[in-house]
Image (tube, rainbow, N blue to C red; front, top):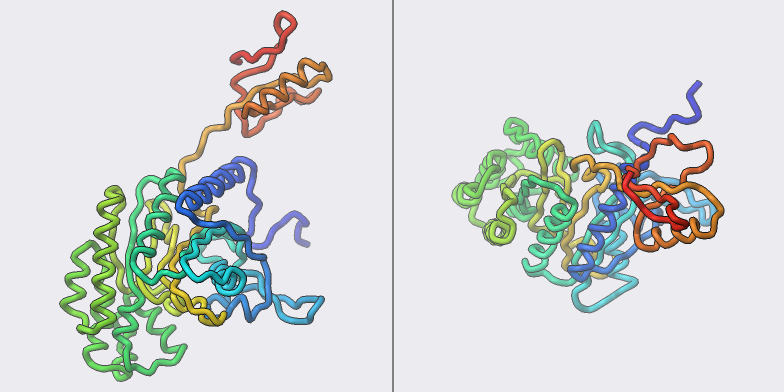
Length: 387
């Protein structure tokens, strides 16, 4: 018989010290987004499945929990990603003509964890720009993403750049089924040249040679030069390489401490992205800590196709990559109904201090607070002194 207190696999409670740190990160990141002019939205945790999954590809559908609405009888989904919801808000509720900058933070639910140590309930934070097709928006989103990581206190960051248009350019004219695209992208992601042989007859010879070359096109800035030499000269590919070079140059100027690299075979979410895309990594965390890029098709299913670019990250994963913080300083105060004592405690809290009142019989409790001062009565007045 299972214990009543056990939780499902890859679902966990967040305990006090970590919960406090996550909440601090949430507030800090949203403040950074606001300083860039982003407006906060709060989409619902669940909505009708067809709206939630419209235009997202079947991969997100597999990650989405589904249930039946007891009021309407229709199928609902618990969101596995917030971006489609924000696209719906931009398209239908705000319906603005010009540029719209939106940010969000809330839980998402996954049917399966992304990795062995991953949670199935990430706390997803993200930001998105709608309405501008130029690279200026891509750079602003990248700046904001890196600023959010820096504000959190993350030290070493490696930024990998790629572009969905490179594969689109290589597959121009090829007829591949959805299953075929899945197998092709899996082979590229695994850098499995042998598995690509199955697609030799489905495309032109120069396209197939480009696919094979794509497997080895990762590393530092010289990747772009090698890519220009070995990939077919097609408009989508040429423009993609030029945009990646421009982005890398801008980031190197503004964020010299960030290591910029390239992985042109990184096709995570290939059905979703339509242009430049990026992923941020940090030592000690095996997967990408943050992902983003351009997805201009995301609003089309809502009847309003608008240029869009954004990023998202999991605050629960981010907090695992940060140094453990010392306990928060606090003031220990005795419990009592003395009017002067209660007034002193109230004043200290209004000034921003944490005051922990010791309840009778609990003088030795251990908490996440480090009481380095105490409130004592001296000469008829309540004063704070070092412990």
